[in-house]
Length: 200
Length: 99
Image (cartoon, rainbow over all chains, first blue to last red; front, side, top):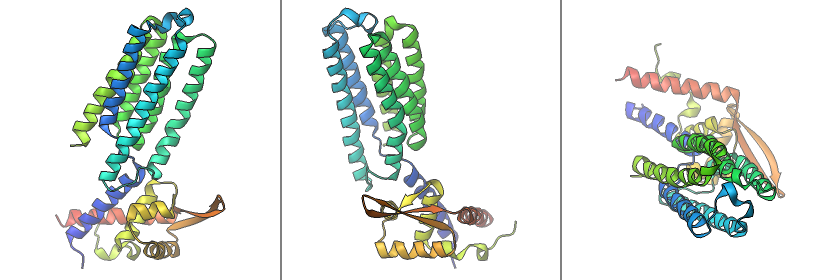
């Protein structure tokens, strides 16, 4: 004869299994903070050291340096996210590469690839002023969809990036600042929130 | 609704089988290895529980090949979904009635 505790335990395990098998909760809050710091540093270097302004970059002649800088920021941010997720999953005795993370990658992969190709097209056609806006919007769409498969707060961050991206498209003269707000400041706030809310 | 523990389906008495059903309820398909990692059980153990659920027609199997290696994917059937939801309702009702 089963007791009430057994049934409670049954329900608890069902809930936990549903969440563990469908959600990727090893995404580390700290990696959000790091990504934000890389982005802010990148934007700072671009603006103050290379005097880069997307609104008038057509003739500034530092495009190669800026592209390399952007790639460096991207590699550092993605690298930290993978490394810290790996550590967090390992601590919980789970694997990083599971059905939930595969699904998460396939969902963010499409909008991010489309955004990357779109940015390249803008770059080669000389419409550099729109690139901060496009990266924000496509990244926001990716995050918005990803939220259902990990922390739902990621969807809120996605909506914010989309809003900043639309503003950056209209106020192109402030697009670098808006980009720094989205990829820098918003990431840091999100990361701290996730850390306080889910990781302590 | 008057419920009793006798209404609970025998197939769900086992925690591993309950785990398989929970995981398949929220995923379109899962392969053998994913299930094994989620449930932390041995190959033989998992295979026998899967067979039980298959016999009840609660889960279905689809065999494909990836790089010439067999890849078996499992999904929940409509029958399995209904039975699982029913099981959850009864569990909740029992817990409520015993409070």
